[in-house]
Length: 310
Image 1 (cartoon, rainbow, N blue to C red):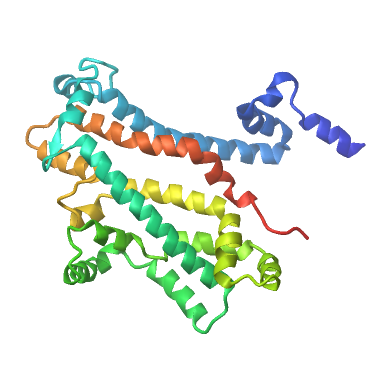
Image 2: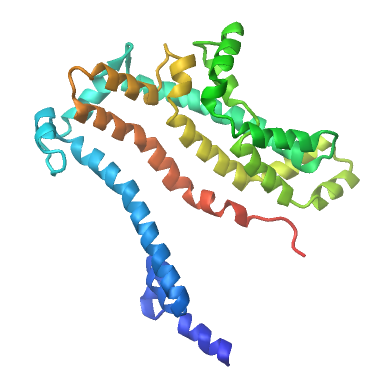
């Protein structure tokens, strides 16, 4: 009876039960005890402040992208549409190293798309092998991966550039894909933990039917890890889309949208037209926002898919 009364108190009334925002804010606050209510309120305030830290800069960029340079210089925080969509029209006509914004979009899709493919292949193979097979030196490799993640990128950049130069992969898209194909790092750890959680019972059943290791990997393990692979692919796409350092060093003649934004800001340093740069930045974020909105449920819920129960 006590449990039934408690559950009835937690149930929202009317249409509010269908409101996700109500359930996870007001409803959760009302259902918690006094101590939990204080903790919930504190955490809620922190998340609201964190959300504002992310939203306010983007809103500022969006608002100022519709201003002309004079209006921007006089009133950086006011709302004005003095330039209308002129900055966006100029942004798509602006060229960096002879490449328009549309061309930089295509370059980014080519570079990032190939980078996502090679990253998924290398990380999936490395993490699956480490998670499901026992061999001498496996623990050493895992520790080396952890230690290597602590080394700053600038610490390995000179040696990396010399290696790429000796291989003839500088200013070559294959070289960028080669750099993105590293099978270790955060993606490796994420997929390693996911493959580790998948029961090996499926593989044993397939082995009884005569399935090879490769067939078990392709037809059983990879489909079961599809949510995690999708999440890694989306997060990798978002990370590589914003990466300008790698194309800056190794693909300078084929500017991506991230590299184009940097070069545009450098070119306009002596004749500042910040609204133009901000308008270009807004257009550059559109693919990221679209992809995140489409796959946000997959990213948030990828760990809900499990193996055998019991």
